[in-house]
Image (cartoon, rainbow, N blue to C red; front, top):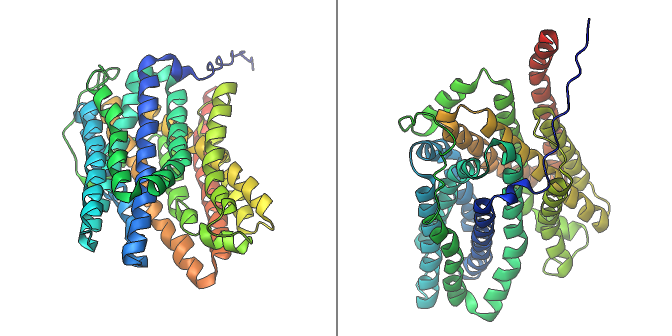
Length: 422
């Protein structure tokens, strides 16, 4: 049997997406908006705790943040398929801005009640869910297929920059300006991206050429979208990977970090505790910069799965970390691995989705990646209340590792077929 030499694909230039002026502006506006999002969390969560001291309300704040992603991501993806993504993102930014102003008015007047908080938390959650699919589609329009991986990875890095610096800025505003004025100032964080989107040509559909389909709703459309791509094992595997990692661990670790800090001998209100909170985001930012600068890790399904398995192992290691230093190192690695495999999965789904339903497929991916984080409150939190959070996190990580291995075996028939065809 003769063998044909195949040239390796050229390595993507470092920070390739930043060569596009539109992406540079969008990146900066998104980072600022994500900082505003995290500043709001810092100020509002502190005021809610001081005012109501309600664990139930604190739990609702987490649920309200992710439940709209779970219930409506596919519908918002359908909106992104059919309408101008610039206008959809502007709507999301104006919702964020309105929520910040609403908090500010209530703080100034001293009339905050539980139902006010519930409404504002829900609107804030919907704003994030509306933004996600349209924000991904517009990246494709800005940079094209050839630089999409770079754009998705840098966009994820930008979100982590907001997570990294937002709490510090939020704490400073809380201390220096107070919660009412701090939230009013925070509302301006969403203006630059909103104004810029009114002046650029990127609709999210400029490179599609595909027919826009009618809107679908909720879970029925999610099933229809999954049926439309079920023949593509790569897309199904990436959606399954996002769902598995989100449901089994997701954001469950963050809510339990005070307990881990206590068990590691760290003062819960000190600098060492803050370092634990920041280590994961710092790892993601460092990982994004490193991978972009070296042009490493092309988007391949198998690579994404292996990185997710490494993330699982790092999580299991953190659950039994014997010292503070080891815990910090593992959190840093967790941030790096998480950014790498999640950005890779997002890129693969965008590239392989049919153009006419790309928004729906991205919405389905976002529902799996973000909405199913609601489940981590049970796998890590509720189970942790029964057996201890170290056991619950460790067991969740190991079960997740086994499920990810099953996803890897799901891809093997396609690999065998590819070898036979060659």
